[in-house]
Image (cartoon, rainbow, N blue to C red; front, top):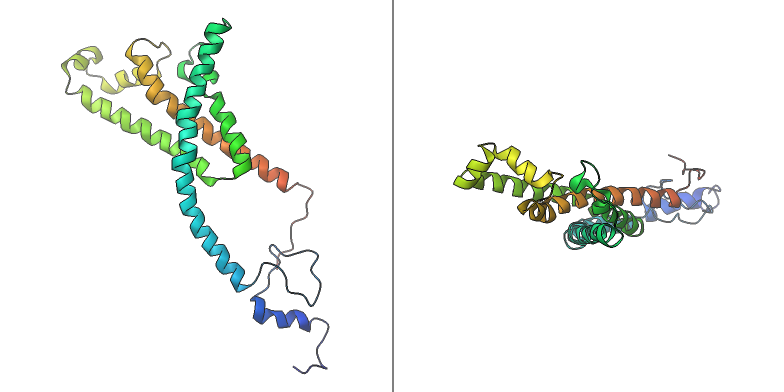
Length: 222
C-alpha cells in the first residue's frame, strides 16, 4: 500500500503486525487512532500465560501454608476462646439448643477471617480450604472406624455400629469426656474450614462488585 493512498485507519492496520490480532477485550477506551492498543501484543499474551502458570503454584502454596492454617488452626482457636470467654466470663449460655459444634461462636471467626482476607488478596486457593477440611474429616472418620473393629472395648460400647458411634463422638451436641477432644481436634477444624471457604467466596464477590459497579458499561465485543 502506498503512502499517499493510506486511509485514516491505515495506522491502525499497520499495528496489526506489531500487536497481533486486535480485540476490544481489555482495550483502552481512550485509545486514539494511530496508536497501538494496550494489552494485545504477543508479548502481553506470553506474559499472561506465564503469570497464569506461576499463579497455580502460588495458589497451591497459599492454600497449604496460609489459608488452611488460618481456618483450621487460628479460626478454631479463636472460636474456642470466644466460646469460653462468652460462656464463663460474661456468664451467657453459649451452648445453643441442638447445635453443638455448629454453635456460631465456634465458626463465626473463620467466616469473618475468610471474607476479610480474601476481599484484599483475591486468592482462589481460599476456596480449597473446605476440600482440605472434608478430606481431613473423612480420613479420621475411616481410620477410627477401622480401629473400632479391632478393639473389644469399642465393639462393646458401639454394639457393632461403628459408623453411628463415630458420628456421635464427633457431632453429638453433648460434649463429654473423649467426645470433647475429638470435636476440638477434628470436628471444629472441619466446620471452620467450611466457614472460611464460604467467607472467602463472599469476600471475593464483594471485592469484584466494588471494582466493577453495575452501571459500568462492558467493553464492546468484536
